[in-house]
Length: 321
Ligand SMILES: C[S@@+](CC[C@H](N)C(=O)[O-])C[C@H]1O[C@@H](n2cnc3c(N)ncnc32)[C@H](O)[C@@H]1O
Image (tube, rainbow, N blue to C red; front, side, top):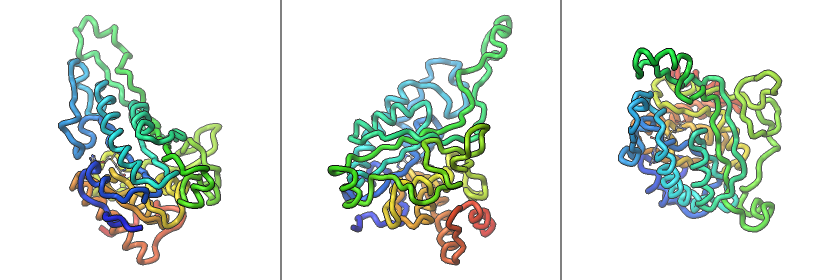
């Protein structure tokens, strides 16, 4: 069924308004990486709502995105709860809602999603090696005589090496099997070989770690994949998104990303022969998404698409700009 919002298009605008224009029960999968409420990280997200309360002078000096403010979590839960209700309405019964999150705020996001009516099925862990050390030394903020007491002690932030992905499901209509036969969603796809031939696991590993088999090789995207003109701070790897789309939808299904950033979900859906709808509030990221998508479609038109991986394709695309 066609929605008033056209398929295979990215719309510039606010997700909370655009979500209301979708046809009820029409979307097979919602796959999204929303703003995490970390200050200055998503400059398109309503800045009035993201208040940074700096009661503590020391905290003021931490880099953007690392300030600790307990009210952020509460505000995120409220905001994401309202978004999740709209997402719930758009999904087919049994449809999955996969939401990237952050280790610090995943509990708030999961409760927001659950309270909107979803069943929480799992929390996948995407591991990566590229995490940077985050902890800051504090010696310079205290008097000289106290500095030795702080030697080696830093803010409570270790290197971030994983992102949680909340796996939620809209309750099916009756038994899962009936729901699947009627709506084509609600089960996981174990038929297609995953990268390396491994059975899907809730740990999505990027590189071989000692003693653990490489379940799914997905490094953070490099410049070749993102486009050298892509300055978005949180671009997701297309191969990871492709895996999640294959796991949860059939070919021809509709994938919605209400916070699409630079279009990674649209590219992944296109390469997996699914349809997509994307929303993005920031005009700059929207333009980058259009550019990336146009390059992929152009390359696909030339028959240059690789079935197994986008990685060999995108450096090629970047060269053409
Ligand atoms: C974490 S980023 C997504 C990045 C994306 N996964 C990619 O690979 O490029 C979240 C995006 O949501 C956008 N955004 C924030 N608030 C929004 C809103 N109310 N409606 C639509 N988009 C919004 C931000 O501008 C940002 O680009």
